[in-house]
Length: 78
Image 1 (spheres, rainbow, N blue to C red):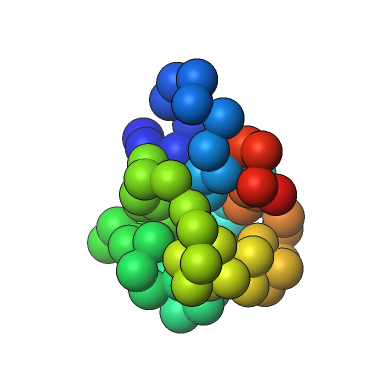
Image 2: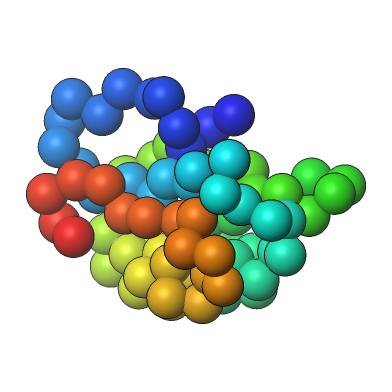
């Protein structure tokens, strides 16, 4: 699953998901539609792309909205 276990040697900020913690609520896709898609069960599929500008703002909103804190931002621009 993108978002966990991917290599981020560049140090750029990226959105990650802990699939074990995630309950598949799907709120993240509403707060970060450019970054998160959901599968048929509501579980997130996050983009592995680096975050900046509006995309970083979307990622922060999704992280804050996650009811189980399954999303996090990893990298130097946090």
